[in-house]
Amino acid sequence: LIQEGFLKRTPRGREATEKAYKHLGKPSQANPGGNLLF
Image (cartoon, rainbow, N blue to C red):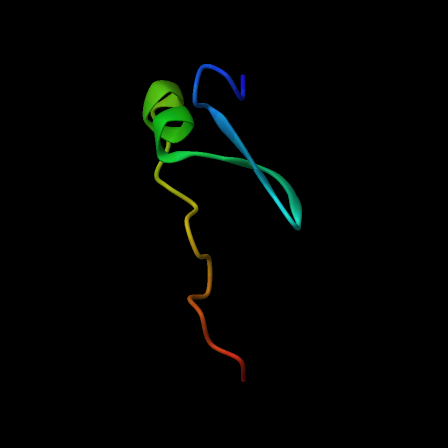
């Protein structure tokens, strides 16, 4: 899945990419809650 571009490796673990969400027909979960600290 990483080689196909559906998952990416991050310091927090594996995360689904935009390509994965589009393939599944789901809305993107990129930055849920944004980059807010507080």
